[in-house]
Image (cartoon, rainbow, N blue to C red):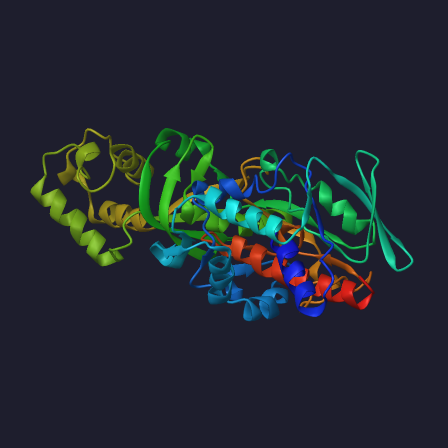
Length: 410
């Protein structure tokens, strides 16, 4: 939708002709996936957009587009559509209504106002180059002709909401390279012997990903224990790195959870010493009442102290106390992988960006062929970064595809 609107604006600026733009949608209506973003609130972008928030085989590819379309530029785009925005926690920007449907409605109204032809319930199955034109074939055996084509079919994540990765073939048919798609911003599978007994427990802390015992990335925020492993914003941020690393067989993966990040080791030791003195006759299983959840504290004690849970707190040695403090600040859990595309919010991997012009998103293999959004091998962190890439890359591809079509006699 954004690419189509950008193309329409470019054509109006360079021609007196009425723009001839068609948007093909395989679903019965456009924007189905958009309605699910930001838990239905549509986290449009983030105040902290920067290249280090994006990942891919050639993640630096996104720099020219992010430079051209800053957060303020994206906000202006939506203001022009009539969408007012509000900034919430951590720089996240949402429509003022906090409803994704209002964003979709504004986009759809603008498509109509720009006389863009919307063709729903139509899956484009093939695109072929025919001289200076492209021939498009749909699943209903209808044929279409265009001067330029933008492939914006999304990735493989959340297939129930409309994109399932089937659009990759439109580009691989032109010899573009597909970097194997992987689920990202998705829950993590971890040692169930630890996580399942804690299922439902939620803490606010930090999660550090370790690969072969070496720290790779740390995130803070909410962490949720589940039957299968771990979830929550801090965990979702690490999931893409986990998926890529496991596919590459990089080695052993662990997540270390800091259950009390406001403490350092010595202050945590002092806290436990104080409690063992004050509550000397309490059983160990109740030592952390008022500090940590019962199931989490019980698990900590079982894993780090060779004493029965009914033993008195005063029976802890200094070594026991130091071990407990260390475990509170670095609760290690073995990682097995991630859940699949059905649960993922984003696709890591996709069509190789090295084969596209980073300033226009035009194919370097086929002139007049463009791609944008999640179909390319670029994925962002949680917090509005993926939608920012959608808008920014759509605006880029639409502008360039219209300019190409105009030059080709559109």
